[in-house]
Image 1: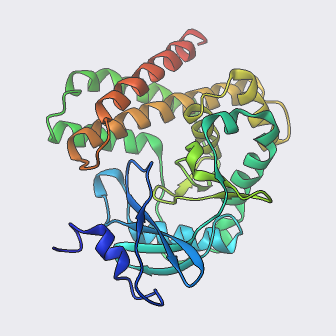
Image 2 (image 1 turned 180 degrees about the vertical axis):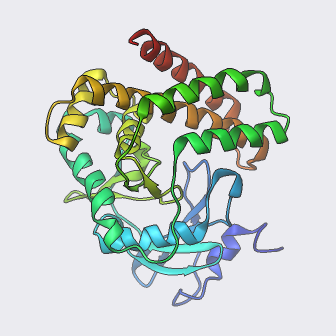
Length: 295
């Protein structure tokens, strides 16, 4: 059996282990195949996966971001990397759920971690890294859906037209280094501090995308979203900033929708992408209706 068809065997065979190991599958991922490995009295996180060009995932970029995150104190240490595999120290802690992100008591910690990602990590980045511009991603996904004769083809002209309106509304941007996939499960609380993991989509971006992404992925209320913006920028958001943020929040939901539409026709993981696409499309429609109504 090849390593590609036997990811557990690939994980077990990595040269970093002190002896035989038994990788345990880590559930919950909808992009990658992950394991926990116990070795030498420690536990390690192992990701097995090649580049995924249709999602803009290049493992050399992920590794550069993970090493910069380690150096900035944002993410745990990388202990081994080779083409198709990365090994990191396992964080013993509680993985956040959306309710934890919505807890106002956690907001300052989350914002502090996002700010360190944005402004500290670039000091440690080495080599070529990507830019993640959500509107390019949306347009590229549309091309992938056309190439794959997706069930969602009839929706594309309208979605792309609305994406252009959102891009115009966002306007000129500040450029920082973004995580770009702020699902609740990428925050881990070890009891003393908060960690940020999973750098598949990392790249230079507007800070508004990460802020909108964490808010839209975790369904923050408008009041909590305002507190998020105020905590990040140090002042209550004015009408212009709020409008730009709301445009980016719509774009974040549209990107998640189209990510899932593409995964419907390309992913081999056991996950109901059709239901996930439909759920996120409904959320995008509600968000865009509110945005359009406030014009």
